Image (cartoon, rainbow, N blue to C red; front, side, top):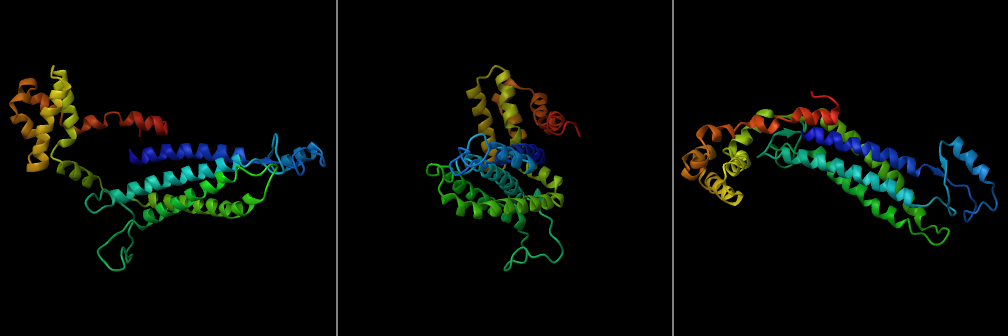
Length: 282
């Protein structure tokens, strides 16, 4: 599910990048102030065609920088998507979670001072690179407001952010791809983490079942909460506490309560979601 979400997000990013590239791919040869006083518009059209660009409908001495701002903003969005997935991996690799982790090769070091560590170094690196790419968005936005037909304040900025942002994002995407290709996933640990919660993941189903048994939502919430708190505070088993609660049992049978603890209920529409994302169910 997590990777399907990321797949859908990066599919949107692909469309955004294609649109941003098309928007910025214009040509302007319209003279010092954009009036074609010293050059025929046909020259601009000819050059644009040869370079695979389209003529800028109306320009000053340069192409309007709102186009470039949108391009860099799109790079920033893609970088944020990289960071979102990298952050998810970092959280999944936390020692107390450990449902997934980056590939750790033989002889690799996780920490220079603590030999036991297996740090998510690639994900941490990607988080930093994303910050860097996003940092180029604001200068691109500030380049939009130039003086009259053009000043040169944008030039020095673009000479830096153009190559830096694109190369950095390209590197980050390649690194993320390699990370995902070798990602280690631990399904048994996921089940263990669910079991550690003592059945609390089913609290909403119990609450809704109580409301369907003509108990007000507020009262149903309180009934479920008081049993859930025993799990948190006393290490009790949620199912057993519910079965022992007379108020709950007046509304629900044992069979109805146990039925609400079926984990497969929460994954019953996964095939539908996969079909939406990938166009197939598996």
